[in-house]
Every structure is written in structure tokens, then in C-alpha cells.
Picture 1 (tube, rainbow, N blue to C red):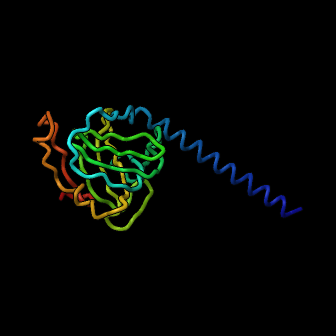
Picture 2 (cartoon, one colour):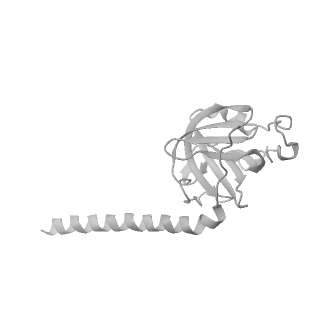
Picture 3 (cartoon, helix red, strand yellow):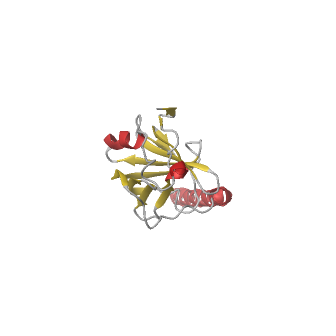
Length: 183
């Protein structure tokens, strides 16, 4: 009888901990909702393809500059497999089982590699991180662990998109970083 009570007690404790984690996640989303706001929608025309699509794992998005302050608003906090590609108009992140993320070219502040983001820790240069500004003015970091890390240099190098967009003043991709330092 004593073992049954222990098992029942552990099951109740486990369910309570899961419930508290769920309540905490909802509270985080409620607190972040105003600073995140609405995400940009994917436009009808993306522009010229600049970096070929690559597959990987969407690690998550965090509020910059903290690599652990995961965003819980909408489905931004959930990991999923993805395909990421870069166009002259911006970066398209198509996620499996979640909505696509469109990062307009004028919003990109930096593209770099890191060893971790959103609680996912990898080896050196294991995560491709894109820092960008939301329409609400909040800067966030979005991370992808690519299946083929040999494509990272194509993402990190500066792109000359000034003649590939209609608005030359918005064509700059901002500074390019690698490992948190200017390249």
C-alpha cells in the first residue's frame, strides 16, 4: 500500500509540474505580446533568389541580445524542421507544422553564427542566427541549425543587393557578424 501511495504522489507531482510549466509559458506569451506585435507577412513576390534553400531545424527566436529569452508569442517558440532561403526582398523561413516567417531585407541587422540560441547549445558555429527588427521596433534573434553547415559562409558573407532591389536605401543588410563580432 505504501508503494501505491508513493506512485500516486509522484504522478500528482508530475502533473502539477507540467501544469505550472504550461501556466508559465502562457504568462511569458502574455508579457511579450505587446513588444512582439504582428509579424511581417510573406509578400506575393519575394525577389531574386540570392542564397539557395537549405534545410535544418528552426531552433527558436529570442529577444535580443539575450540568447536564452525565448519568445513564446504565437508559434515562434516551438522548434520545427524548416527550409530557409534568401531573396533580394528578404529571408523566408518555411517551417513544418508552423507558420512561415518572413524577414524583410530592410529589417535585417546582422547575420552570424553562434554556438547556441534559445536553450539549444551546439558546437562552435553550430547555429545560424539572424538578428532583425520587428515592425514593433523590438530586435529579435532567429536561429536555424542547418543540416549542412558548409552553407553558413554563404549566409554570413555580405551581399551586394543594392542593384537587386527597387529601393536602394533599404537594400543594406546591416552589419554582418560572426560569433558575435564584426566580420
